[in-house]
View (cartoon, rainbow, N blue to C red):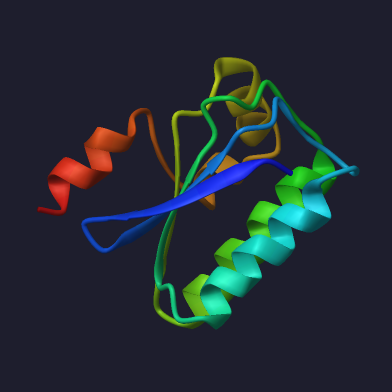
Length: 112
């Protein structure tokens, strides 16, 4: 999985650079998220602007990250989700589980 990580306004921003999150790379995504949480990151933004497809294993990796950060009273936010990927969240009703913003600036500007 190709991704970058940066810190802005106390958020650790993981930008996924792959077009697909599926069985081939979802394990890496999950491992990355759990490593971030284990090192003490409690506010994570996952930026999905590049992602054009996500399957159940990709959704599961994001759910695992969300579950672990909520257990630590942290915040797990998804941003910049493409319409075809957002439809998967809506179809599975995971849009009710995750905190989702259309643009990263919506969350960053509200936290300053």
